[in-house]
Image (cartoon, rainbow, N blue to C red; front, top):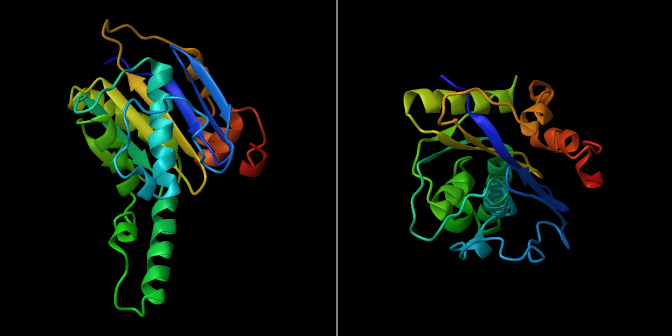
Length: 226
């Protein structure tokens, strides 16, 4: 079985959005924290309820939009794609849980806003990605303390083998950084190598998306300096 090939990578931090892939590369310094207004036509059509999303869910959608642009993948409203979504990272859910329970306490411990509650699961943000981009392949959440990104990449290969799904999106998030990868299994059955694979050579040593962003962007891994 031929291994899936990394065709595009995108990174979103509070201050920067970047992507590179087979079709094009992109880098933008954001005007404000997760302010994507300076990126023209980021989405092919409006993301439903985008204004209500927590910042991490907005970053996940923006990161995947840039990922598809870099890979040359077009998507349209109500169009479905046989693409797996494999996600990792519990910090966004931890932030959402803290926000919800603060709201619950402020409401006298009798109620909490449902819009805050729905993002207390680690799959909630990625689910918004799946809905907007029409991804109808397997949707898996994977958590690893030893090799988070490696586990996602291996899951993409297993998905290609067991589900015959040739396209996968790997989404890895922490409290400030979103890293997304688009993988495709070559149709001709021949192994291929790409510059993106070379960039990922040290991925087993990366313990967080912020660490990965620092290495991939050739900057300090401290997020405030990216």
